[in-house]
Image 1 (cartoon, rainbow, N blue to C red):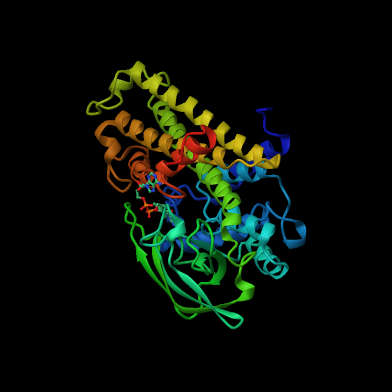
Image 2 (cartoon, rainbow, N blue to C red; image 1 turned 30 degrees about the horizontal axis):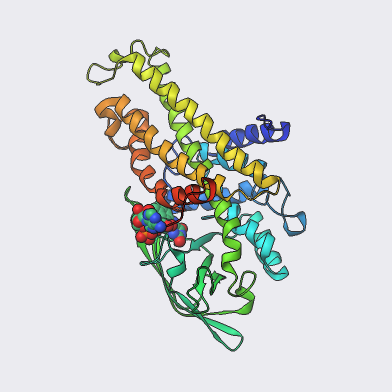
Length: 408
Ligand SMILES: Cc1cc2nc3c(=O)[nH]c(=O)nc-3n(C[C@H](O)[C@H](O)[C@H](O)COP(=O)(O)OP(=O)(O)OC[C@H]3O[C@@H](n4cnc5c(N)ncnc54)[C@H](O)[C@@H]3O)c2cc1C
């Protein structure tokens, strides 16, 4: 494998960084936690940024020019994604998954009408998406979900409820997993519908996350009517699309997690430099009240984490590269997701320790170091080992599919 990025991807990385320096104000408070940019007073700026990202041609990289796309390879999409998250650019995914998995799935399996309706709108930053899989009694085991779509002539009537639906409060469309037949055999009887969120019968109740932001929701479907034209691909065919969907979701979410980690690490190192000693030998005197560990230990800890971040990036590149070669990389995507969520949590905890009691101060507290970013990441990173499949689910996949261990 060639570990170097192509000249085009290196240029893309520089372009995204330059875009962020131009367009994202220094006091922007979004992009620290999953989905926070779609909440409250952050939403207007997030929405405005969608059009600007679209004009760069970055939102439609995953699909053909016929549908408003720019047909860039998966590696380029990943480079855009990791840089956008590093620089905390809002709208980079047009809601949750719009760019990294919903769009590509519509391009791969949607009807001609769906491609013409949704892909150009996504590419021009005009359509935001949410993803409705989880239910109050169905998360890891989606096969048990009970939201139904019952046929009534050529229409379908949807009833049920979804939970933890990120960005539903601003989304125009929901990528909704429903039960359309009662088969209990794993994966049978499930259908994905693309559902307009403004349809009568859709009700949304916000849920606050640990950081106090209403970034996810409970979404109720009460006799919501849709047509056959809203089915993605085949009726009862959802399970056939899940491997591609989850591979993309986990690879991209993992790369995002690594990016947030890399940013905190870079900012921590910059902070130490700014205090006058890059080697950390005066770390103990950063502040007389700061309880710092031994400076060599701190140096080594930071070096360990920096190496782990690079390893994490390579894991994500590997999954994307395999996908680009047409290989099935379901397991590799789980490796990225598992590794990245653990690294994000570990790094946030390490930086908190390094900053001593100051690390625990929230961003709006006088005296907070690094703008309270360590505390923020410490809290928000907890959800990283749940969303997109929990740690245990990723381990199960790696154990059974990669190591050949028994499933039960
Ligand atoms: C920040 C955040 C954003 C989210 N956004 C969305 C979204 O936009 N759309 C959406 O649909 N969902 C979303 N989710 C929900 C997420 O996908 C689910 O929480 C996740 O899949 C786990 O499901 P659950 O909460 O029902 O837990 P459960 O599946 O009930 O799991 C509970 C515990 O049991 C363990 N467990 C379950 N099955 C097994 C097994 N077979 N072997 C070993 N251990 C097991 C799990 O690891 C976990 O520790 C989000 C979650 C978070 C935290």
